[in-house]
Length: 462
Ligand SMILES: *Cc1c(COP(=O)(O)O)cnc(C)c1O
Image (cartoon, rainbow, N blue to C red; front, top):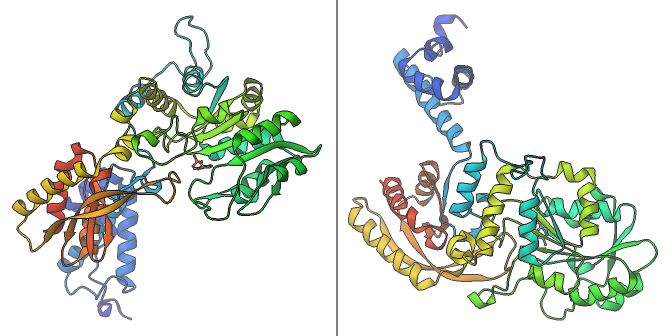
C-alpha cells in the first residue's frame, strides 16, 4: 500500500503527542517513559483497527489518541491502592483489606513510619527485642505465658507445624480440614511444613476415642481447627478443646488450637454469636492458640501465637520465623489496637466491633436522612429509597450469620454504570448490585464518610 493511501497516515507520531500541552500532566504524574509506552500502544491499536474506525483528519486522530490516553491514565489510577468506602455491608471484607483500623492504630502507624524504637530499648539505650512490648500485651490480654506475632494466621500454622511436627504426624479431625479462601488449604500447609496429616473420624463426627486410638510414637501434636467460614449442622459431633487438651497432657504431646478469627472475649453479650475465645482455649489447656489479627480483633494483618513459653521459644528460634516476621508498621497498629482492647474501649473505637454491634434502628435513621438529602439535591431521574438488607461479618468469622441492616438504594437507568462511576471516583465507593439497583449498606460506612458519600452518589447519577 502506498503511503498516501494508508488510512492511518493521519496518526500523529509518538513524540508529537508527548509534547502536546494536554499530555504534560500525565507525564508529570506517571513519568514520560510510561506515557510514551501508552501512546505507542494506543497508536498500534488504532492501526490494527482495535480502537474504532480510522480518523478522517489529523485533528480527529489527535483527539482520539488523547481520549484513549485519558482512559489509560484513569485505569492506571484506579489500580493504585487507595481509600475505599465500603458500602457492601460485609464488615471484614477480604477484597477491601479486611479489618478497617481504629483511628489510634492509623495514628500509631503514621508515627512509626519514620524512625521508631523497633529494636532499641529506650530506657537503657541497648538493643531491644523486636515486638517484645506488643507480645507482652498479647500475653496480658489472653493470660498466656508467651506470645509471638507473625505475618498472618496461615504463617502461624506453617511455623507451628514445621517447628513442632516436621517429619512427624499431627492428628486432626476430618471435619476440620478447612480451606480459607483460595490459597489457604490445610493439607497444603501441612505439605509445605513437612508434617504428616493424620486424619481421624469422619466429616460430621469425630470422638475422643478416634484421637486416642490414633496416637503413636510418631505423633507430634493434636490439632483443632475452628471451622471459621462454614458450619456442620445436624448429625454431628466434635471433641472440645478441653477434652483434647486433657488427652494431650496424658500422652505428653502438645494440643494446638487454631481459633481463626481471634475473639479476645465472649461477644455474645453484645448480641453476637459464639466464637472461640483465645483465653478460654488456653484455660482449657491448649498449649498453643493461633489466631488472625485482622478479623474479630480488628487490627492489622498478622498471625498471633500464644501459649507455653518453651514452645513459643522453639518457634521463635526457627529460621522460618525470621522470614515470617512483621514490620514496624504492623507492630505499631497492633500495639494501638491491643491497647484499646486492654482499656475496655473496643466497642467505642475498633471499627469491626463497632460495626458488628450497631443497632439496625440507628442505621435506618441514618439511611433515611441520607435518602432525604439525596432526593432534595438530585436533579436526575433517579429513585432513592431505604431498603432492609443483611450485613455479614465476613472474613470467615461468625459463619452463616447475617445481621439485619438498612441500605440506601439507588435506582437509575443504568445501575452498572452508576456502580462503575462510584468505584472510579475519589474516594472510591463499592456497592452491592441487586436487581438493577445499587445498595449501600450504611453499617460499613462510618458517619464521618456520609457527607462525601452523598456527594459521590450525586456525581455518579448525573
Ligand atoms: C482465617 C483463618 C486462617 C487464616 O488466617 P490468615 O490470617 O488469613 O492467614 C486460618 N485458620 C482459621 C481457622 C481461620 O479462620
